[in-house]
Image 1: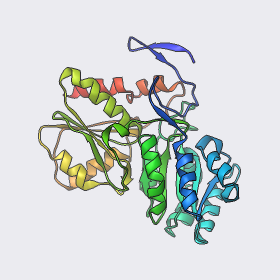
Image 2: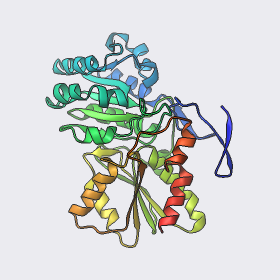
Image 3: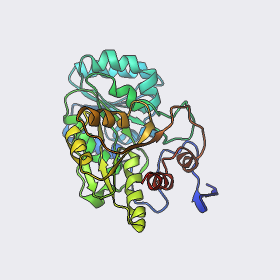
Length: 333
């Protein structure tokens, strides 16, 4: 790693491929998905693990070591992976399928649509490197995955924030009947939600902290950023509420409308996703349908092919770092 000056501060650079977004000294848990799935499999003999040559890079290797007879390595063939998962689900298994988000949502979209979603099968598609969590450029940056999966009938869509979210998500999506697409943070994953007495519930948004001036509605790593921003803006006497929305579809419209209707607050939707077709547009459409008129702003990735590079640099460049997010909110007030 090398040091670089950004916004007047010395910051650690990451390699382009690193998938962890933990800050220096931040509490983390190693491979929460792999450990949670292995624990679930001890109670659920119908659970199987499948991947397309990415077991090590989606933390599925932990499951594979514990249950080699229930682990299917399909090679670099994502379309085959989805078709085989559909076949196993037809026979009563509950496949947890892992790959990178770009390979599932772009390369194997039709196979998910026709063989899994149309038959409403119990296949759980858990995908690493969501949004801008790698610096390898457009070939690996899944900046539009939520928009694609939201559009697929029968598909539940989840964007977890941290290790706790992932650990609690795994048994919840296994209990859910029907296909699920979940973003995955792998490796050493930050732990932040434990401070807020959080519990994951499928289809439910959670108000993590309250504030009188701004309501930030966020999912995934942007909830983590929103909490950092809320603490930082306390020094400027700006009260920031943070509403975490881990389930993008079905959306918890009741909670979103209730919190947005509280008068006098700027509503900001923050997401690690293109500004097209994700959480922001889902929230905006909900508020419009319900007749809720509020000051409204968006923090997200541009409708563009993103640059390659180190994540701190890219997050600053595209406005999703805590520093840039705080500056945007102060400018809007």
